[in-house]
Image 1 (cartoon, helix red, strand yellow):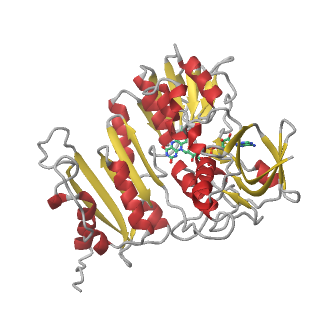
Image 2: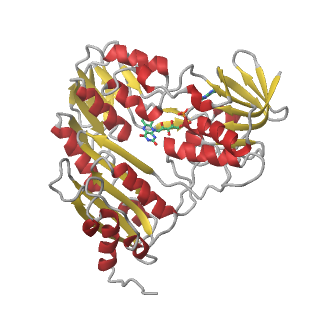
Image 3: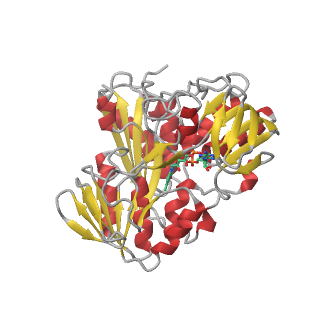
Length: 449
Ligand SMILES: Cc1cc2nc3c(=O)[nH]c(=O)nc-3n(C[C@H](O)[C@H](O)[C@H](O)COP(=O)(O)OP(=O)(O)OC[C@H]3O[C@@H](n4cnc5c(N)ncnc54)[C@H](O)[C@@H]3O)c2cc1C
């Protein structure tokens, strides 16, 4: 039986990052990364296969990222904690000194009649399955997308670029409602509608109909929508069977329970990414945030802590960005609604200005930043940005300010650099101006040292 210093089950965002960091941090060379798939998908790139990229092969994570870690392709079927081994489906046994579980998640299948019909597809992160979807989508006319979260909307937007007629069905009042403020949700919906996508909100799918294949969906209000294909994007379920069977504890949102160092209840086993439980940065309660950026951060933390606690996970906030039609948007931390649910008295600061200065420069577009602060402490709780291509970096800046507990005063006074082609004017820089706006509203004064 072969034995390795570090074995990682899972070769996607969380597992790969753990392998990379274990090499950089500890100089570890004896690492095995077990994964089911021969080629690993860039998970966030999956919707773009069906429009902009056009091919599965253009959405592969390069194995060179593994460095000196060795990949093993196959399915792990059990973990023997006493003997510190992983059993593979092909009968192999692999010994470990330290084990990282990064088994990720699989698409959620809602209990709706007709879900098993042919031509009902999910966002499986599997090359062969996604290749089959490429073939299946050829020649298809109308597509119904179930779920108006960012995965569903990105699929909708990419498929409409191929000329399909798309209807998105979302159960909640708005698409993206769980992660965005209402104004951004409406912008996202309007942007897609402007490209011809039909969006139905506040209505669920009651059944998928057809003899063998999906031919229509019936909505909860009785309306029937004809279709040739259904794509379901309503969320994911953490893959925890291996961990559960091995007696590792599972948390309230269904992820493997971990401490602030990503350790499970076995000191030699860590868990990271979609399969691991997350805890809110704001109050430490379990939160179901499952993102690649979160998975990679946890991969780094687990790798650093393999032999002794070194890096602490200070808690999770959701940070995400997307582009739908020609509208880019990004969000970090709490929405106003979620902040109020946690008991914060929220004060909003807003600023909008041209993305370049002067605003007459080619491609200058209005960019708006909206920040939500806690009135009592002045600390930043969340924020969003819309609608230029730089908003992804703005939400990362917002996230940095949140986890460093920056106040409206500190953000308003932040040093910034500007350039006509690259940023807004220093007279109207959106991030610091939104904080100033909140500060004026709060009628606070910047203290002079
Ligand atoms: C369509 C789509 C778009 C997305 N877009 C974004 C985005 O824009 N930004 C963002 O931050 N997040 C995005 N996400 C979420 C992101 O993909 C996940 O959070 C991320 O993939 C989680 O990484 P992971 O390593 O934890 O798990 P996964 O990516 O789920 O990988 C799990 C790995 O474990 C392996 N594995 C599982 N079970 C076994 C076993 N028994 N034996 C051996 N190997 C096993 C699999 O083979 C795989 O390698 C998107 C997700 C989807 C589906």
